[in-house]
Length: 286
Image 1 (cartoon, rainbow, N blue to C red):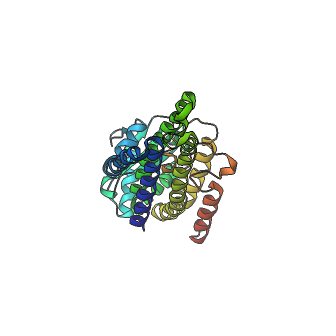
Image 2 (image 1 turned 60 degrees about the horizontal axis):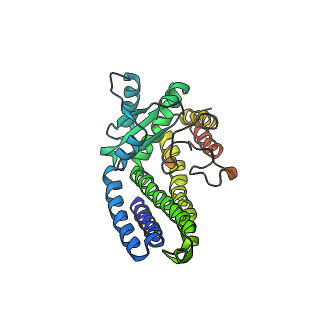
Image 3 (image 1 turned 135 degrees about the horizontal axis):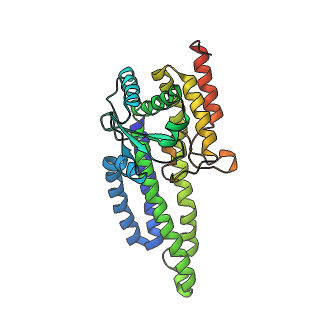
């Protein structure tokens, strides 16, 4: 299933890039965008994890720096039959976490300083188990690729926006060149929304599955439920450095969404908590 999702993602993002390139530079622009897509597809497969970690200035955490965290993750990875991932710390107050990497053997888990500051041990364990669930379910590759390719789409959309503005200033026949100003503006508006829709389709179903798998790994669904409530509450008033291109990777949406969450890359936190409470009740936890 993840192979199919990856194929759909690559195709959709490639088409988006080529469409924007065609509007910016007609046939030549489409060819250039196609080669950009090929390069981005290869780069996102092999290096998307490093790109995302570098974006947030994530620093490796050594076992000597955080022995309790290492002990916790070692216990969870053993239970989940996973290799030990690399651990990273993002030094920002916004509490959140994400997993990245192309497979379990090349996985990394990053947590923010804010998360470690406000969560208790059971809650941190629930969050880590959720991220390990993404690794176990082998959906960290598509998440990382979506982040890299969405960033490329948004970059070209910005180019289209500037192309439309410059074309408008020039006047005359330039209004009819390169797909026209209306076409460039449409690309600048529609492309990021289309990229977001792809991210949403991938992320929302992944989060429910990771919650359930993570609850099974930790054996503490209520720990994860309480963590989600705290993280969701904090995200409303603690500023985050997260980019819209990578928002779907985090355990809770780090960005404030409008329209009642219509365009959120994550499912409702209340829905996730309700499902986790059902899991806890069925397992005899209260």
